[in-house]
Image 1 (tube, rainbow, N blue to C red):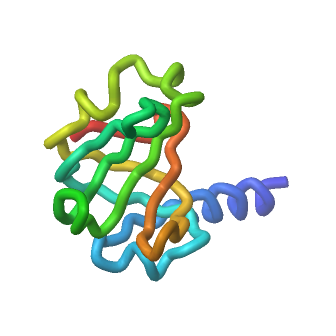
Image 2: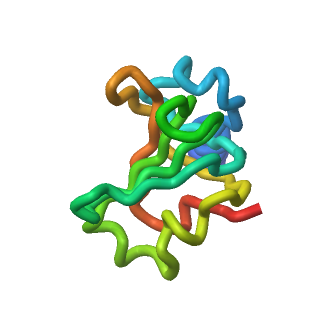
Length: 114
């Protein structure tokens, strides 16, 4: 049982590798961690999606985090207001959407404010 436990722990540790923002697209499909400053935020006109932009402000961002309306209840704060300008660490699965890497975050526990 011990070897299985250590394999599980090491898999979890390596699956959340901390990566640099400029390399994040290379990790498509993998769970990684980034620690960066939120350069700009946006709440969609219909109020259903919050976007947190990194690298540069929108529309020149390098990376985006999307939070959808159905997941707003999992936050004790309003993400587009509270996180603007803050440095945060986020763990998530890298997907490519419209040519840019992003995470879809569903819970504030995935975000750590530095």
